[in-house]
Length: 113
Length: 112
Image (tube, rainbow over the protein chains, first blue to last red):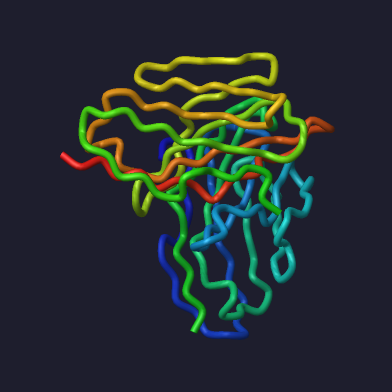
């Protein structure tokens, strides 16, 4: 998707290892979000950021941490990956909160074995 | 917890027919948005309707909002095979600047 990229696109990791997913934007948008998508649950918010070094928790934040040291990058870290964190992770950006549409990345498919 | 819930979960129609999907939500909102997701891809923003609007159009899309019933509908007219995708509604919460909460989606299949 234009202006937002996620890396890696696919990753397989072992239980107990730390994993970091990266979201990079070139739109200079203030807000960035991490969602996970699972069958039967739709998209659920993990964490979001409303500016550099400003972050807040979402609905399913346990086991995840985030960092935003630059406007363009928002990192999601699984501190010690578990099988329940096998999912597709989407990053999204927006100019403001819900009054603006979100632009989503293409997703990272993470498998924890 | 889910704010919006789409209905039906899955819908299969013939090309050229209209497709209607519904969304119900629980708390007061500032606006409601609809997104499309093609298989294996990220979500794409389709349309936003504000809480003081009742109907909005964009090309073959028509969205209605009934705040008294806390519900919205998305109508796709003259559907095409390329409309095959999952459709999600998303809402904020009226109190404060909150991120969007997405429903579980409706899977639409348009058969050529």
